[in-house]
Image (cartoon, rainbow, N blue to C red; front, side, top):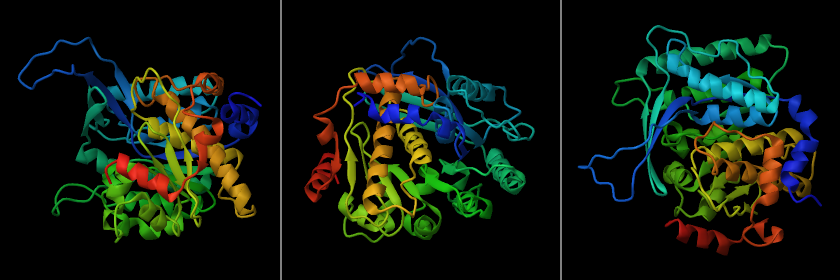
Length: 395
């Protein structure tokens, strides 16, 4: 057997990946990061080397990861045409295209409008902790809603429909504050997920704070009717489910709530992920690779999501005409390749730069250290396992 089975399987399916298309809707931002020394105090001055401008945002990260492994992408991004800094993002998309010999649709890629600025993010890192400051203008929120509507209206006129829709962080879908400001309270996300031209596409959702803080009650019906796979990290999932009426915030209770709604993947920061198929009561874990030189966890969850979607394009675990055993096997394969993509992202700085080809991922997987044996690195999760994870994450 190959020593990089997850990645080698994807290489063998390269032709199928090249024939697929993913619609990526959501976040785009220019990132500027700072690493603070451990002893930093607010009243001190610190001199640092010039920091690069990087492309980021959930849907830019999704798009670049997929393009680099050879999947064509149609992105719908809040990318301001009038802002020269948007070239940071277009250059990242071009680099990923070149890596994977894939195509990023350029038609109406950028949001039109005078004076609009692409979202800007400042990331301040100190050791394993980080603070993220996002700047997203109200004018762009309004323009982005119209931009999404234009793209959705054109779907019926395109020759090929997307195979998968990936919805990331849509900042404009935040709740409106006290009848002031701009915020669509999830309306853009719901419009994308329920659009009739996308009814036959698989829908993968990886919400950002603007969406998941609206709460589980707001999204319960949408998840049941319009979402195939829902992914959040463990902290985000608990905040999302805070109003779900659960007895506690334990993972066992959370997985029970999702059981009748959609397949869920809960990432455990740098510690792997646990997934549960819709209708199942048997979560599956993929424990992490042991990364000796961790560079940056930014975008690791997005990279994992892109890996899961790429695997779905080869072996769809949501397909109805397969038995439960085969569905679980395909889901496990998707989680394993997602683990490879997420782990590799932790070795590079930024969520959308240096995106690897399939061959690079295979080399990484071959060299990666596993926590125990391959049998122990991927297995069904018991209630006791969930209890220990809850304790580790202070549930």
